[in-house]
Image (tube, rainbow, N blue to C red):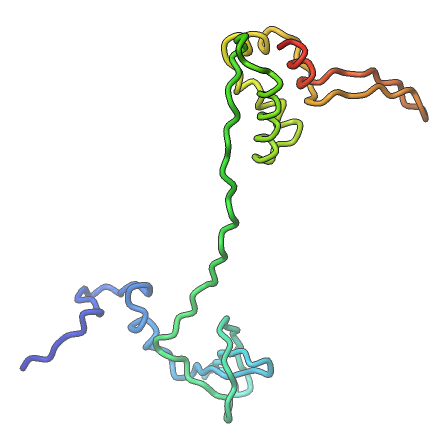
Length: 184
């Protein structure tokens, strides 16, 4: 009966990849490398260079903890590969699109505005995002109004502030929200 070859080892003379053939890659650990446990219980791979004196020692830290036992010297397991920890992805909130306002007489602008602000809150938009995204949900008459009107830079109304402490007085400014509700 002929000797059966190992199907995991490639027949190609090139070196196999570590991902597909980890045993073949790690089975050739040099004799001068051993793994020891340090005082915290982590594995430490030490190696002695034969050209230098016996007191010179190179210490390489590995990520795998090793439980120390009597003697505290370990051989690197030939099939042991440390995989990096993967973190779970944060939950993603589903984007909700606000309704489109066309400006027809049968549409209620107040209901649209309530719905728009509720969906804006759900999507995590601040006042700047509400103002910047508002024109994307307008069509027909509503879009024409937005393109032709002089639109303020703020979503909410800004109150008037008198001059105080060297600062000049600031007038009250109507925000985009109030301007839209007055128009429709």
